Length: 106
Image (cartoon, rainbow, N blue to C red):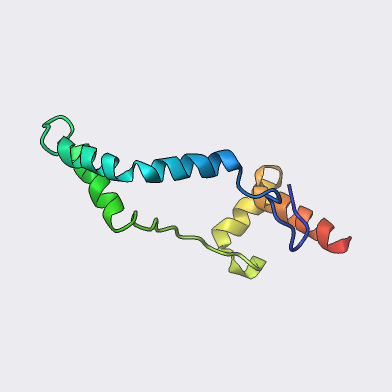
């Protein structure tokens, strides 16, 4: 599904229910942290509690994602070009390029 340029994918914004749940969770944050600290004393709960406290104490670590942006056929390796030439019906890249070309021509 595509949106027009400048159009929001969520024009209604966040629902009031989600905001209420978030606000309620924030109200219980001190008790939740206390429960995690108490769980550090329990052998069966110690590691998960420690992991949670460490993960959220300074914010969850950013996920590293490697993305390769292909803007031209010149960005492809010989092996990738051969794959496209052999399997044009099963290659999502060709379908995407066809959709983009159709959208550009309209």
